[in-house]
Image (cartoon, rainbow, N blue to C red; front, side, top):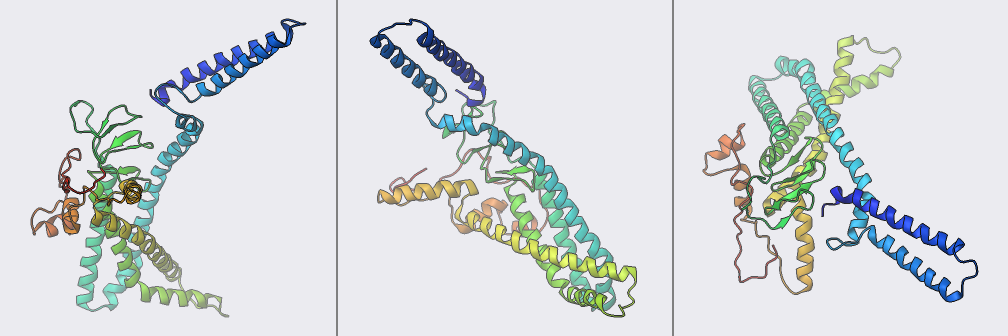
Length: 366
């Protein structure tokens, strides 16, 4: 029974039992004025039985258990969190777009003219090539990560390999598939729901998500290092604003100083924060895990360790093979055409069938 479709029936059932309980209380108070004690005790026992039945009806039936009571109690909270997260996803996407655009505008208005006027030719060529390459990679992968569907189990096919049934969608769940409460649908090889993308990270856009994190981190590190000298000059210039008399800076110069400081602080902060996230996902990819599977596998490894067994991830194909599967690298030239250049190729597999690299002789939890 689906929890979302049966809550009205559960509520009406509880109200009927509550009315029955109130009717019994009314009969006990005004029914038989001079009743005997055995009759009163019988009525009290009946009231107690109906009270227990009323309590149990809130969470118990033949298909569920007491966990449904907690789900029902927290359902409004879940609904609020999911809808707020879904709404804030649009805000976060706009925020990423605005901040990235502001960095690009500052570089073109204040940083790039300084590079063209004072740097050597080979450094000018390096900054123009490297900077625009990183910009193209960031924009391409962010756009693809936000607009590409992560992949969902087919609803028109009945005979698909599945490990369980989703209690929300009431459909078979293939391996590595999990339900996203924010998108309200099952996602193939779900990693997590990213509010900065306003989209789930799954089988078909996992590569775009990780590449965006990687190239955005590299781009922020590049901007932070490249603008370090300009940042120090701008910081010293702003410190001199408080001298008496203050320096005679033009409006463009003061705007350039503040913009360069904003650029350096923003890119340095994002490089540290996003760099940690990128490193964490790189570790997960090397292990052949997603963020959801990391928590599941840790619990399963702990359970098997208590029984004297060792857990092995069935989807771990070796560190290098895991990276090849993520990036879709099939031959050596693909490292250049599919990793270092924008590419819209599909990932390996369909997200439903997975090759498990384990032997049946060893203890295994799937």
